[in-house]
Image 1 (cartoon, chains in turn orange, green):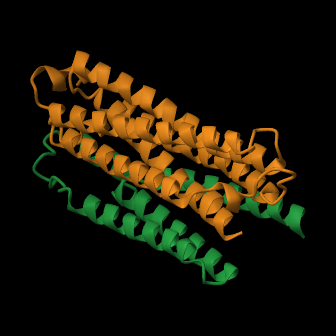
Image 2 (image 1 turned 180 degrees about the vertical axis):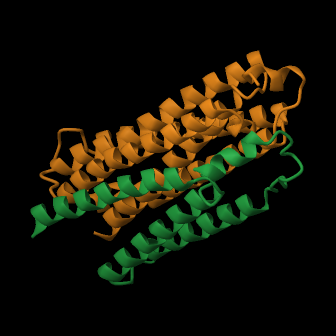
Length: 206
Length: 107
């Protein structure tokens, strides 16, 4: 049974993202990669936690952070996680149009999150919180910036996946790509849960 | 791992699977939303003592991460033994690292 048989006769299996051994191996490999990503972010969190009170001459976390903006960013990312899981559901129902639609909503939400973050960083630099201001500012920009870079990468990745689905249709080859990019997107959201908790809320508390 | 192979090896899987509705994802979303709002409210209120606020914050974050991984990253579905091992190994290294870093710097 080659990968193409499914697509040609229009009979996708129920979970097309797990129909081939290749696909299942890709998903497993991706999870191991996420284990490594967890370690990567863990080191950045460790550095941030260790250095967050060393503010030098710069502003403190409490002076800098504005909760409404962080809350808005959190809601945007949380909602985008929901829309990407809707895309996976549409994938299970073999509804290509609905799936692409949800993926596009996910991308738009990701872009608005990035816009908000860029605006936020501009604000901070204006208030004298530059990358080299203090150990706190360096570790802050490294951690939050790394997360932002992951969001940007996710936006590009999902866009490319959409392009491929539109070109080649929903097959047992393209379905795992949609599924894996959705897993990645959830992972970004999970990391953000720790960022808004550890960086922003704990920063506000002191 | 064997459960991972089962459903793909059999040809007509459609009947054995029920198509999942959006309900559980919306439940996951509402729970995440509630936990997020509790965390923000605890800080915005600003009258609870610091240690207690920290405990609330970390508690909410940990619960929310479990909910999101279970509901949205499909971890509670079958055939996820190896992904769970992968993530737990990562989490193990992370906790060792974070605790050591904070310990070195602050104690």
